[in-house]
Image (cartoon, rainbow, N blue to C red):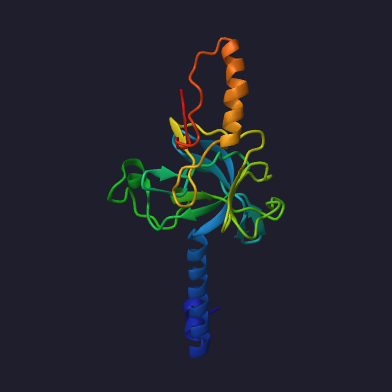
Length: 241
């Protein structure tokens, strides 16, 4: 019986080239299988203090073994995955991330451990590429069973998924709606028009009626505070007490 080496030697050039090409293709396929780029994930838990999550990759890996065929295997949950949100200039857009929320997992080109722990320019703790250990998660992607209702096609919205509360920015109007109330907390609130001119809280007619009817009634009940400012001379400023 001829040896494998002898058999390979007996292959014509075309057959040897095909065999080598198949080997290279298999090696490349395996390398690509080990390289992580991006994939949907499902939040298992979120740590709001450290801003990291435990995330389950949303797709099972197909594992092939000789004599066993292909098996679908869930990838182990990823631990301490940093969140990615819009942030810059001292401002952040945070979200109340909850278990079951979906996200996009993105895997870094290099080991992120030292940068994540210390910030700044760092050396790699170890050399690895596109590894499961170097994931970030971006909240947002969703499947067809979690579609957003009443999507606005002519404005930008910051909203709850059910639409019960939102800030709607359209070309000519900004609308703020709360499910039960809208709260504004500040030492002072100024209301101005598009030219920056302060606006009145009440008309002159309503002000005169208030002074003639409501203010005396309040005084009769023991109110000793000052009357509201005259609308003809004061800007519209609400000040906290």
